[in-house]
Length: 157
Image 1 (cartoon, rainbow, N blue to C red):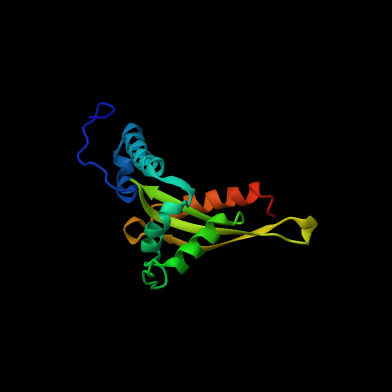
Image 2: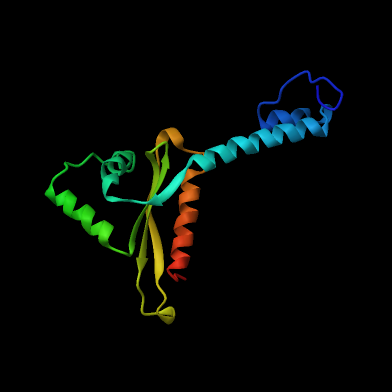
């Protein structure tokens, strides 16, 4: 019972809410809106965004198997040297999104030093991926926002 009137249904989607809004009180619509926001906020709060660390290689490569049909490479000295070179490059940023300790989303930001535009660097983003079980929930957008902010801190135009 909301606003003194019993509800004959419980809205489960925004479309359903809109279809029945003429028969609902504003209080009911407000309760529904708050519950949707709470769900979205929970998803956002649980996502940890950070740059990759040495121990992240296997999890990142497992995620990359969903990108362009990549296969899991052999873990050998050559791969280890490449990973170390990437991590030690201050202009190469592998940004990760983690849920429950699992890497579920990633993108790469490269800052390119520049002799034009007042010697301000520019940046480009590559390898944007979200695990197929976690897509369409805004995780890649959150990582791209993080990458954009990082590029701004680096002085990129």
